[in-house]
Picture 1 (cartoon, rainbow, N blue to C red):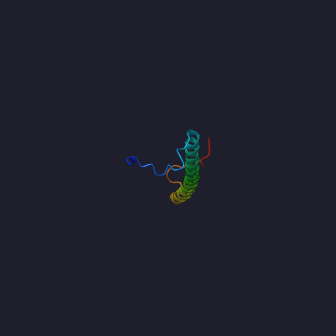
Picture 2: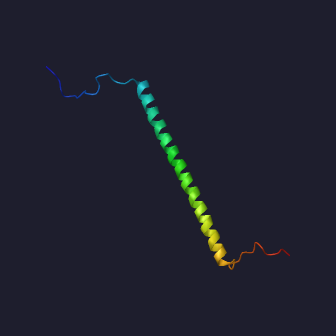
Picture 3: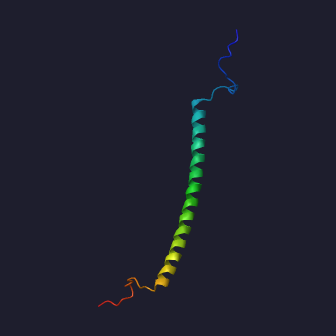
Amino acid sequence: MEDNLIDDSGFELGMPTRVEMLKHQCDLLCSELETTRRDLRKAHKNIAGLIVMYRRESERETARMGYQYGDYSKREKP
């Protein structure tokens, strides 16, 4: 009598050992870490660009205002 209740296709080479499963998990985590590092570098680059853009816009706004809102940095000290 043949028992076909359990589909064992894909296990022709046998079950992986614990060490093989841990190595595979480690490889997956290393790959995920590299992806995260790449995304983080990209985010840092984008943030740096936004900071530069903000500073340029801020400088233009300051120049346009003509220091009329209380810029006392150039005031002589008593």
